[in-house]
Length: 207
Length: 207
Image 1 (tube, rainbow over the protein chains, first blue to last red):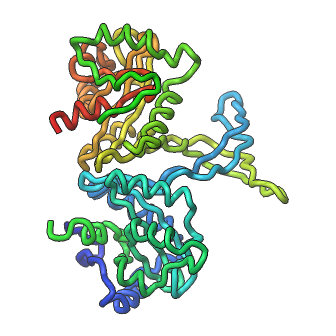
Image 2: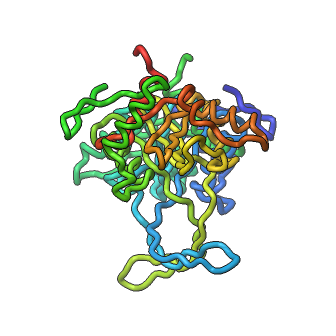
Image 3: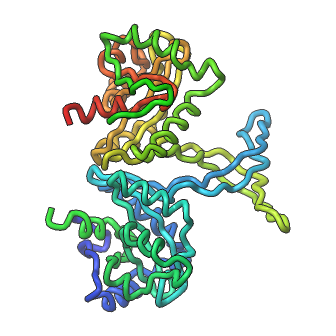
């Protein structure tokens, strides 16, 4: 699959462990949306918009679940929610469809430089990911190392393994291990977080 | 696929045009969750809970999108949203994964007895369904005739056809046509709206 980039450059593919250092430098120079005050979440939403417009995938972030307590209905204007509370989501934040497959993922970030803390995830998210894996969905996480400007794709089955095995001991995934079992996602202009490239490499290699 | 029903009865499969009248009577006698003050949406959510617990599918209703304007953070208690507005959803209400496939659907109801008005749908929902169809998702609608206690499954491609062809003329799908091109979904106790049975019949017949 080829994307036409506004800057005329071809789509870069994922970078595994070997070229990881090179890719890190490239990411810092190239994009660094975070340097321009853009959050990882916003960059991801823009990437999904890009995929949608190009007709390559339909992925949306789910709205935050809210418990509504009181609503006013003023005359001649829209209903106003006057009292409501944030509820805990029972699923991951993102899902959608790509090449006939169900995609489901969570995106998290850390300021750490050497490992990704598992405290970023909640038990119910792990349960949801396991349920989706059992239904043969493509389930994964996107991990953003904000200080390093590096993004990793990790199959949810690996995350669940770390979650289940670590109990109360280490509780984080070392960057070095991520470089081995994950895929580094290229960070650029459009799409900013080109995670579908990692999906292609990981699930559809050789197709 | 077999479900064990609490009442000991086996899962009923979908009913097409020929046995539609018989099924309607059966539905009225059997369940009629609406007679017990339960909404179609609630019955559907219970069905999704049932599927999740049985490990046969992971389908969730998306939260209503809310535009938050003002949040208070009282000491020693949860954040309170003091001003917020309902936003229009850009997708359908339900999606998930079943047997490796992406499911995406919208559920609507009418009090009409002879046809289903298309005004129940919005342009952006039709656009979203077309996008998901293009990605080879299993996209459909569940149409509930509240006065008749009958529920129909309809492939979104048929809905889109009606939507595109009717322009400003008829603007509804006659029940008789639904009995031909849709599938009637059995309404029971657990799951209340057994739409996966229609999915099996429609997409996986003979598997």
